[in-house]
Length: 456
Figure (cartoon, rainbow, N blue to C red):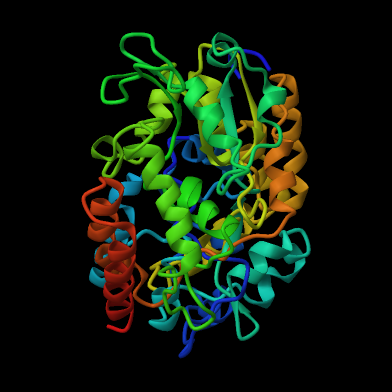
């Protein structure tokens, strides 16, 4: 793979592929809104639509793709002005909650499965109803299932991840006497662990000693072998699933405090604090982009992540790189898989124009720029070839993500108070990854706090 092989803190914390379990679904569809607002804003003379529609996103790469695609939309609907707003991932869902509550949200906003449920139950977003039926056959089924409840769909599919894989720095591999073939079938845990020895060989301290050599001082890092961190989608969900565990049960109760959880999190914490083959959690607990940035700077040999970082790696890596499978755990390779939608604001002052933009974004023509710019893999099947063609031209093969996505997956977190639950468990996870709280104790307290917060 060549040198030039987002910034999206990605799709997760998103939900799994099961449909959302919600009640009190009261929002109406665009068609119903149009019937309720005949001749209102958005109805121009001669039947043309007019007005302004705003779209809120968290991903700069996708924003750029949207703006390219919306230029074509403007030719079809010249009376509608569409603008995009970028809100950083770190603040996105807090600001969205505040703005929706205050009536200041955009007409359309990107959202993932972890956070969507309250907006459905509170009637904040519109149903993607029968007036979208001509488009739905082209939307990938896992995305439709993920955002459906009681036979109703609550967002227009936009982005889809496959599974998780590992980006490698070919120069650092070569320096360690390794090849990509040495990474093709690694496993972690137990007496058959082949992953840790590779990571130790790839880790070098400031004095040039490797992690498997006498005299290695991991407290004085030079380069790290791996990107272990408190990264839900890229790291710990996959270790938990591969250990045979789950984060939540069918009723959204948190169940990560299990034997499998202690195995998975214990292994990760040891990679950081005992073996020193990954950056200290003081660098990563509150900076989700640290490991990616260190990989791009040639300081991490193996960066485990998803297709959502492909464009970042391709644009930012000034070294030869490639993609290999993530390591298998005691129960094999079990990855999280996720999709992202755009939702229509039920309080939009221009529902007709909003519906027209949503239809455009859900069409193969409207979604094609997401793929042809390489920004992300569209969740609209008719637009996916552009993504494949783009990366083929760059001499990049992203098929490893799709291959992992075809396998067994672990359902990602969701629930009516997911944001509060995340805030409740994170302090305990912070201490656990820092090595200041035993894994078993941290998981027990984190789970109790998360379940209490989820219950409200």
